[in-house]
Image (cartoon, rainbow, N blue to C red; front, side, top):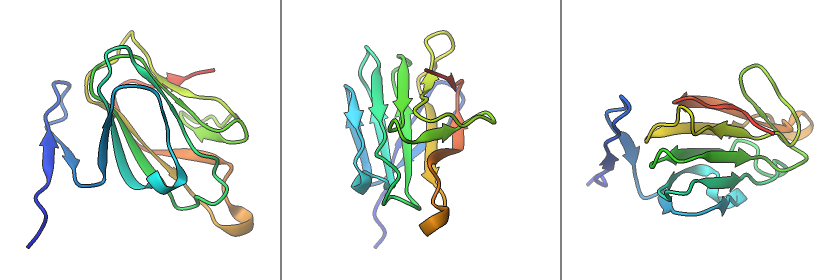
Amino acid sequence: MATAKRYTDFPNGIKSFPRANNTTSHATNQTISAADCLGLTKIFTGSSGATVTLPILTGVVGAIVTIVNNTGALMTIDPNAADGIAFAGNVTDGKSILNSLIDTQKGDYVTLASIGAGATAATFWTVVAIGGKWQDGS
């Protein structure tokens, strides 16, 4: 018998976002561990926004994590200072991405993956799916 999936409805055009047992909900800042990067979805519900810190990429090649802004508050996603985030054609070590207050909508999300293996392991997270308006941060 298949496990029933839970769904969250968002008002910004996304009809639903699948939620299974690998979904967690948070109201405050979070540091994601390497163990969290196996398809985990983190939904943020705090009205004052949150900063999400990603683990260093060493040892998490092939990892994937989705971060959902479920309030429309400011979200900042920070890589480790030695890593970057490939976003909008740019990769800068230690540079974050922001779901800014200007255009933030409840339900904005970003899915990040580490790509590469062994000696070719990436030193940056790659945005593989995105919803809403995100921008390069500092």
